Image (cartoon, rainbow over the protein chains, first blue to last red):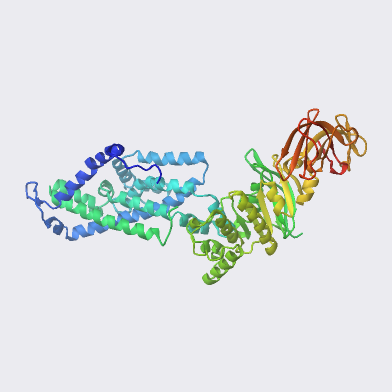
Length: 286
Length: 352
């Protein structure tokens, strides 16, 4: 190494600010939560410092297990839906002219300016029986009578995907636009039809980007709290709803903290597995 | 007629013309170079042949069969791209065997064929390497092996050597030419390097900045008998002298009468013409000599690079460059008066 000198404290000073922010706004709150998850709950009161595993033992209920599985399931499913639709969508955008690309991206960005609350209530209205889109279909003559598409699993999945889709495109756009246009062309001169080209070369060479997008949407969707309550039935409520319920309405902070920590651990393990599997055998990052 | 035929092929993107009315016939088994400056449409022409672009007008025929509307993946042409376009997520063997995988060839047969091709391009033993582990020259060879895997009807190369350093490029030129002769596959190579084109090709197609084909001929014929001033100037160096035709076999340049071997057909006297004379055809004599095919002036510069000597003569504002071997070096110095002798056989008359 040339010009590498032992750094004194002053050289590290610029790092102090982000480190401090990270500590104040992430590490300290997280540490507090981790600590509270071991504290003792006082019924009717709050909690007192202690070290007991009772909160974690209390997690062992059918409700918690079912909700946990459902939360992971809907997060995984919506991530899969978003990537399956988002990848070809982004691919077509990157093949467009510069101008049309900007129009599409601005359109997607504008969805991000809406809050989750507005999106949730807007779709609950649009999917409802009385004022929803089904009335339009009745008017066209496609269906007999208006139907309610909400609340339900499909409505929830749709809402979550609507929310996460712009992020999916944003994550996929840079690697896709950097893709050498000669790669698909080369595949075609070698005899691959456009569809084969897409799956063997475009998807294949961007495997890392696809895994990254999947993990991003998965993690993003795990935290869904509002949409399940607006668009889903109580059995579609996710763990975030359960945690809030424990923390706010039952004032059982230690239990909520234990739930959150356990949920996070399971998610991290799943993400790690996805990344290892997605990386595949000896694939080099481009 | 067997071979590739282009009939009135033209391509434009909106108002921008990339290729203007090209008519060509490329016989089988030949090594053809599309040569021209950047932006002359040579790459577009290659992409039209490959089927990656659709011509705005005209037809492309292969052995009398119209392939204008045949999509690229059904043409069975092998192509090497300028960026090489090797698949980064596959090994060397998987890259080479890709076209066979698409054709559902058995895995073992695929690997066997990949091995043969890698032997052919002298990369034996690298079959399980990753693309990123190869040097530029090796990647080059993989790209060629991949394009040749299906025994293509046409082998197309888009400036594949431009990314290599000079020494490696010269080696690859020879190797590519020998490979083509061994396989006798009809090959089209796009290049802007006239030396590369001269080294490798049976036929050179010269394209100009006006996006037209200016000349198609063997490399030597193009060098000796350029079709117009653009070709004369672009291929090698040339003295281009403006004059007026006078009589059946003569051109007047300033006050010098130049006897020439031939005038273009149908040339009437008193037409403006340009005479192209290659530097190595011009002899320089010390002192002032008058007469036909002789121009005298002051030596303005002598470039002696060891392997050859170039003498720059300033003949009343007209610059004439002569080139000779060190042994045949004329006894003149910078500032001397000297005479350039332009042999009639070396003077190629072009319409202005």
